Length: 95
Image (cartoon, rainbow, N blue to C red; front, side):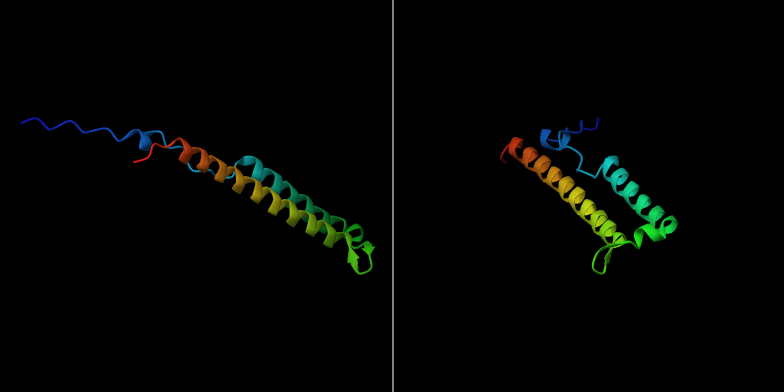
């Protein structure tokens, strides 16, 4: 007795794209920023301790810039993931 042939999955499962993951550029941008900040903190203490405005020094400004860059890149990749998901669901056939 022959085994029945397995039925292929419906097209929506075969054509489903991989989930969006932050790419190399996300890690590269934020990793280089962190490395630069760490390098400056360890080697240029006098520069990072320079006062900018009142009690705020250059190290605090650099840390805020690094945090802002991290949040901006994370929001950018999150938005790209939602756009890919919305485009996938727009082309999906109703069941």
